[in-house]
Length: 327
Image (cartoon, rainbow, N blue to C red):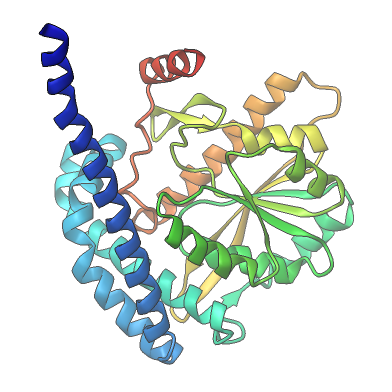
């Protein structure tokens, strides 16, 4: 009787779980279809119109979803008083920036982005000189300005060199196919974070450029805890490990919004030291690019995606995560 009662007790729970999974898949499919339809519709408009429409949409839709996270993270970085005074302005600014990013990325995909919209006068010769050394380039940026447009532009600057980016799979398969398709149409190769580093290393050793946007808390990445705005954050070591393994310089660069477009700026060029201890070099280079990201964010704080929980992983959570993987 007890066994039957336990079995009866489990059955509804199993049904509820299956129902939640079905609803979750249906919701993701609906979101993906809606995004696809919206892109097709807005793709009919001119770039000038989309520069107005997308920010209006994101300024209306995003703040209720983002405001709480923005305030929490601003308080972690700058203190509670600063967060209380600036949360509204930061939420509005980054919501608008997300709209601009979408409009610019759609225009680039459709071939409608005006020539010179992303100004690179000082950067182009630097990147080409580094690529000419033949060791490849590990290019690190952050979620500031328009990181999607930066990847496309770097591909243009690299001329005949292969270019790839390492990206995170989106949890929504349809959205992932849309975004990945847009990236691949420019000729950029896509490597996912959850696959072997053998292919990225092969590309670097062929003299190519590898782009990464590692300024987030990435669960499945190897990393170390480093200060970020004065508080320890789990920081991916992948970019530095690739630079050390290949001998490629690690370059940090970001976009900055100007009155009529974007400017591409290089913040640092960090070279692995031949013969140095591998682990020490990985930590040194990881610390270097992380400091460059923080320096860029401090220059214009409202440019960064403050709704991302950068300090989510703690030493205790990491230990529990590793224990679950071993089990």
